[in-house]
Every structure is written in structure tokens, then in C-alpha cells.
Length: 336
Image (cartoon, rainbow, N blue to C red):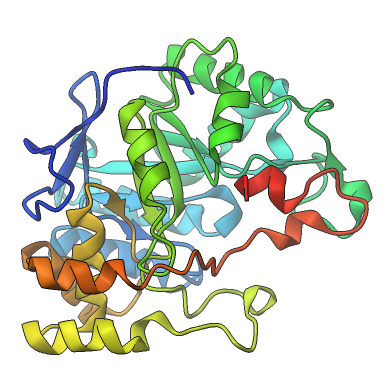
């Protein structure tokens, strides 16, 4: 990783201070710590969810081209702007470059398509979704022939094109998602901009304390995805013996102690670590409950109990990228 000054988290630096509500970038742009995730939010539901979330007070919306719902989100955003509910500058909008657009010449067109779908002139944050490259005509791989290797689509080339998008004003900040320590190092060779965010799976069963601290020391903010255990993840990612995080008895006892739903405990824990967190819901009641996690404080005994849950368990393990004939392995993805 490229060394750099650590990012600012609210006005605090302690990792268990639950007053942390935002993450500040070097240019003083501020990303709200709590965002609305839109992965798996179905067409016909996601637009209403975005509008309801904004009414509740969410100001951070996390999107991606591969989610297949950016056009509906864009219509919702246009409506709230036109009706004066919020201004564009009041919102933090993130999206992600999909794996089939890693070639240098494909990055900007992919971002421009996302901007067209979202009806925006710029993104606040644009991320490389995975350190995995696919051929341009492959959304998901059906065989090893659908992949491009790092020699064929170097991460350094992809990143140079991401940097060019910043210089053109198409994205204010750029970062990555699902990047390990070694992949951050690989991408950063010759980089002009250090990745400003790494969006990774984080929850009490996968805490990654050392990696989170290392990213922070190198000026990289962290956004936690699947913070509630992604119970509605695609069936291809589900194994028979997977734990159900929202039903974990330790989380349940803490929730009962505070008179809060388990989801609030998980969200409050993520925010208290100094990370951003993007729980997904299209249910108005759950949207309000999740937002109320900003007011929930966990005490040292709660944090000690949660610390004991770490099993280095991934709900999204990346195995889909390691099929026979793929140039990638799980070691390439996760360093473990």
C-alpha cells in the first residue's frame, strides 16, 4: 500500500467511540457512516426504498452497475431533486465498476453509463467492484474462458483509468471493493491516487481487525458490506451449514439488553469501529430501525462479547471466481 495520512473519522480517532457518524476525506468531503445498500433490491421496490430512506434521513446511497437497478434509483433521485426534498450536494452516491470493464478503454464508458442511469453528472465515489477481470461480453463467468488474467487486464491499467475519471470530474473519489492487502499493493504500483475506500465484507463473524487498522493507517476508509449477514444473498452463495448472524445468541442478548433489534446492534458495532456501513432493506419499518442505530451506544462488555464472535467466516467467499480454468484462486483474492 502507498503510505499516506490516515483518514479522519468524525472528530474522533478511538475505534469504539459511537459518536462517529461520518468519515472525512483529505479534501474535507464527508461520507455519512450509515448508508443504504441496494444489492438485491428488486426492480419495482428499490426506487421506493431510496425515496423512503431519503425521507427518513439517509444521505448515503450505495449502488453498482451489476445490481441491475441503477436506472430505477436514478429516477428516484431525479424525483427527490425535482421536488426539492434534497439537493444533489446533500447526498453521497457510490457506484462500482463491474468486472467486464477492467480494460483501460472500458472504464470511462462504464462510468458514463452508470451516470446516465443514475441521472447524475458525477459520483461521489467510484469503486472497482472486484480485483477480477472478465471479458467484455461476460457479466458472470460460465467457464474459465470468460476470464481475463491480470496480465491481460492489469489492475494498474484499470486504476489509471479510474484516476482519469477523477481528473475529468466524473467521480470525486475513487476506491476499491473486495481488495486484499496484496491486491491493494498490486494496484498501487505507480498510482497517483491512493485508493480512498475499500468496501469489504465485515461483521462480527469476519472482523478483520488488523486489515481494517492497516487500511486506516494508509489513508483508506473502510465500508462494511453484508453487515447483517446477507440472509437474502443469492442461492449460489448459500451453504447448508451457514450461520444466521441475526439469530446469533450473543447478538440477541445484547439486543435484548438495549431493547433494540439485533440489526441495530450490528450496525452500531460497525459504526463504532470507525467504518461506514451499508445495510440493505426495502421495508420502511426496517429502514427506520436501521437508521435509529445511529443513536445506539454499545458498552465495553458488549464490545468484548462481540469480539469473541470472530470466526473469519465469509458469507461472500469469492468461490464463483475460482472455477476450473479461471486464472484466479481464493489466495489471490484474500491472502489466506
